[in-house]
Image (cartoon, helix red, strand yellow):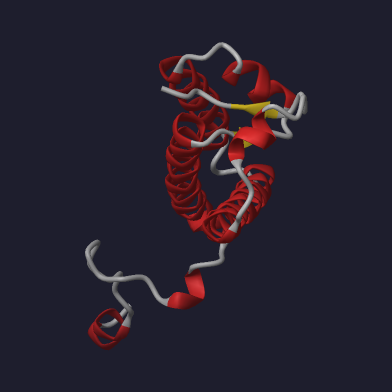
Length: 152
């Protein structure tokens, strides 16, 4: 090798320099993508928890998920919080542990899409509740087994 070849060879960019966008979707950075997806999912999960607690403690709500409904029927906001955080931590933790695999990335995208749909549903539900003329007392006494509430 001569001196001209050595000086003309490309050097690696410094560690702090942003990577080209073309590398963003390569398997090499899959772990980073999955972590970003999991953080976004966790934010939506916390949003879901806050709205669930708000409606449960103020008006009550219909809960279609039988597992969540059985947790809510215990009547303890702390139990709901612990259950939600435990299931969220377990699920997201498993995906974090497997973050460098293709399956984990696919699952992380799927979970994010599902939780985004839940978030959109909450926004729709919150807007519809404001415009409803229905007395929540009638809904709560309608003997619908899906109705849950933690009235103060």
